[in-house]
Image (cartoon, rainbow, N blue to C red; front, top):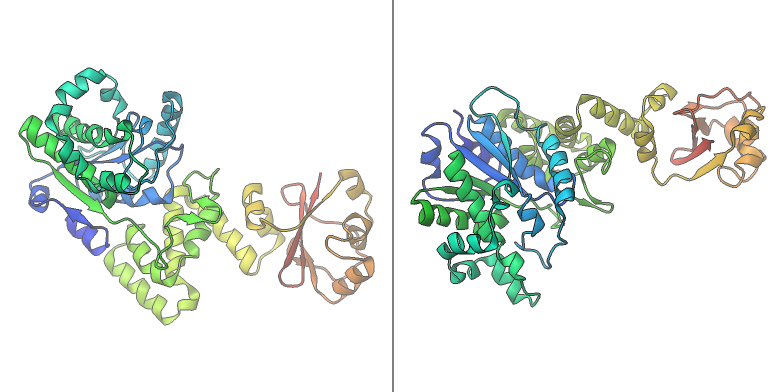
Length: 430
């Protein structure tokens, strides 16, 4: 088996771990779990560090459990949050869990026949069997209030004046019981998580010691930040989601393509499965020609393929080439409507009725009364710029303003007009 710890270490994915975990991992196949709160129907790229941790664990020959918190998702983890989350009903959580499972299956092997195939578990399945009185009698008596109050996540909320509801306060005890349940029933001896989860995880190891007289282990990975101190995974438009309906594959690809040089070396280690030798070689090539953005392109390629597949990667690359390089009508036509509109988001648009469009006799008519004031202020301006070679439609340069209309409508309804080098307009025929 490959060394899981060493893999995380060279990738910069190791924050803290309990003593003896390395020795424990050398004794054969072990099991570990990492939890995901299903507060949305998609994971975002902030979750990818945890997902990649499970992926490396499985690649090292061990068995990963992905726990979705159908029970804890009804409460909300207070760890390093400034306020209590909105509580979700079971129907919403069940929908979210189903979507998350589909996304995890792109990284983890759930369907294999090997003994270390991944498994998805939902803590609602065991927590729903407890009554409140049973839980506080049978589980709560093993952990003192002093112990729970000593956790940084609790102390910070109390110190900042926002307080902490009893519901949130119980979260670490429920998460701790999750660990005990999986240790007892699934022989799961390790919990993985972000560094903000350390307190909750060791509550689980403590429960296992006190309730079962057993040993268990904790390992956390760093919380990812950007070199400039900004929060990782956030853009002006919000979170970068794995769901293509929330964040298009093109926008997803562009996020990684635009990371800074300072972040690229860190991200290529964390978010890809490229080996150390390959990454070092890519870094050397990048250092010789930073303007080519070799690292960023490789990161974007690797992650977009894992999340969205080869075909969406190809479309995202084509879309990027269209905006920043040479392309043709055929390249534009190859884009689906979602990607086309994403590429040219914010571009001025003008609508033309199908009847008016069918009556046009020349290119110049298109830039006359119908679109006048949007693309050109007058036919004279349009004629002069077309004759000067400064106008393209669907990336095909125009030369004759009096040429007849014989244009391919992209997605059967769009024309992309380019005026000069940087000014784009969309004409929608509807």
